[in-house]
Image (cartoon, rainbow, N blue to C red; front, side):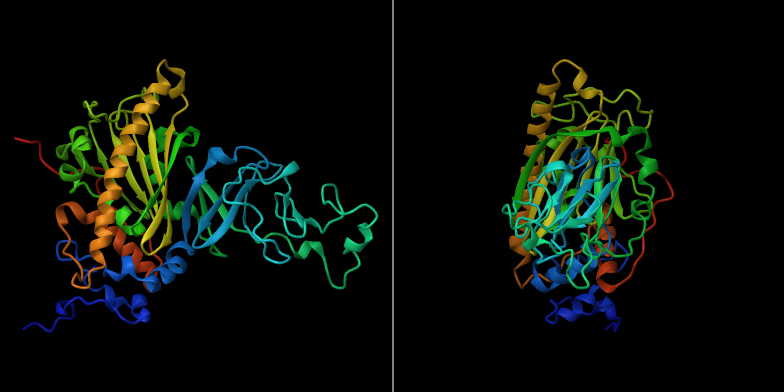
Length: 430
């Protein structure tokens, strides 16, 4: 009998310290044709989830929203990353700024999650004691300025200018790193973040002809998913399940049209080409394609999972994005957004086209979420200790899971990619 450590049977860890131990993931670290999935506790354990928040979501770039939502001074997005609320806005010079959504006085949450403007005249005002900040995060002072609601005649009571060893310059909002790529806003909670470009790898080159920075959101929906965010991710990045879960999608996204589309970067990627025409149940059509696309993009759909939690689908005529926010080990809140390129709305019937696309994506996404919730139910069964990878279809899952493992065990690296830009997965049907 072999004594190879990789032949030790899989088991569920009982000590949270094992979640940061390389040996725990020995079966997932094998080459994809021999590998097994992540340990089930990666999807069910509150202990794993707590560590993952810090090592995965609080240590790198996370997509949280859309550039179009902060298109002017004072416009804002309030997002949650690793359990922290963050404000993203623009200062008077149009520069992006990010801050922890916490007053420096007594830690009051400054803005509600649905806020779209920071406040009057671009001022962020604490609802508790009226400490106020500008869009560069500087503390403008404790109540002694217009709008502070200090009772007339009592201004001196609230004047802190004579306070011992107190300087407003020392109590500005706590900064958070922010950046953009294409139409997406990113946040990094690390005090010394690396560049976003290093995490994106070659994606800027791959999407160069799409000019994604000009695309804007048109429709949004929210889904509350009773499943771990990684199950949502893994479902998105494989097409093994299409014939059984998505009979409608399978008609317009044929197996024989799938390619690996995987370069260096913190992402997994695949593409379909040619883009199929709609069936009776719907499909990709509905809006005109972007006229400036080159030959390689004009008839191809790109499907990318941006580590750790964002799905990006870019077709010649629209984009569909899923921003997933882990709430608990077994719950994810998903924001689905349909975006268009600048030319799309200039054509007759554009709104009807958007309606059709929104309905089709809602159908596909609802089917996906129903199946991942069934997986979540099953993965809690103690009898299940992990499953063998289907190497032909699940190489992206293997890549993604090993990115998660890297962060959990403290390894900072960006995976490489294929030598070819695009590799056909299946021969033409006979």
